Length: 610
Image (cartoon, rainbow, N blue to C red):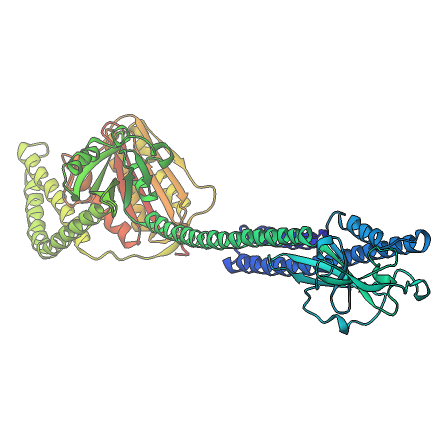
């Protein structure tokens, strides 16, 4: 192909590269359809074929022009040589024949011959053909006398193509033509003319005759070059076809790969979001038994960080109870909803329900293990609350029916005891016995009053109250008693006002009850700390902490039950009443304690906007 063709082809390929590069930059990757590259290669193939045809036709024209000019030059050279010899040196037929033979030996010249209009060869570069008839497929008699050189391409019997240039041959004018030739002599069976000298008669010595000269030129170098161009074009076309098919297949694979990758990414993102949003903890190991995944719920339950847990053996970071499940799984069993108490963080036991199983892929290969943990702390809290409510309901019904029946005879007993006390002398034993009866009757009356208070639905007189001011007032009420017991009270209030809709009197009753319980638990010396803060949900939180002996672990779930007490003279209804009052405010109270580390009660109530 020519330089211009290569420039066009290179420009087209560069344009495709620029298009794909621009598409790659704009889209963040190669997202073009496979049909684009296939169509581009198809267009390139058409361009190559068009250029090949153009090159072929151009080569044919160049060949015709070059060989035509070469043939015309040869004919003119022969005419000039013959004209010079005949006019200046009186050449005869032998000299003209020699000139034609010598000229026929030039490179790429196959033959030179002069014939008459009947096709008889008068002179030939191959002397043995003189006198024979020229074998041509067009009638020589139809040629017009002219000095213009014409050409044609002929095919020989041996499938050889020859470029043949021809025209009329007149090396000298008519006045110089010899006329004294005769036809008496023969050569190889053909009648020819002879001159008086006895030499072969030159064909131009015949007056009023027209002769034609033919120059046969070798066309094979040009045809070899054209065949080489065709082969090159076919090779380029084949390369482009292979490139197009390869590009189409690769782009098709790329599209499928991209589609599969995108689908996998979407599925993975969907699965990750679902797993991350699960309300249960999920822990997964890989096929080597190393921890590979924690979701946020598992981090919250165990208190472990995924970045620190990933890649570790479960035995190094998980409790023995959990690790024991792997052995059960290896034995071919599946664990379903097995409840246990786990110590993920030292000193903190979390009730969980564990389920575990192996992960096997479609080929039956072991992929890993998955452990699902469900935090039972809230479930058990609700269960305890339901049981507590059931107890409260039962006791409330009992108290409502019994309290009035006890109070009436109790008043009579107290009256009789007071009567007998007045009959005995001051300080006598009988007077002291009567006094004991009066005190016990009063104590029993208080118990009955608490029963009635417990059984009666809590009625609240809600007001917008400054919690900080209420805490200051409550602390002043117990300040004298705490000082007598050498117990310090720390009051840590929120920096901003905390306003809530509460019943100040009933809420003050709760605070005093908690204060007195803390003071009694500490006995002598200690510290009572009171905090007020605002939670993330804008609720009001109050924390009351003491430095007493704390609450036993086995008693923690019973402290709000009615009639449960660890005091010698306690009724066991104080915390129950506190619980009911806080619940009536739509709040909640929780207790935290460890033996020897004191106890802490947290009250959370909605603020005035809730």
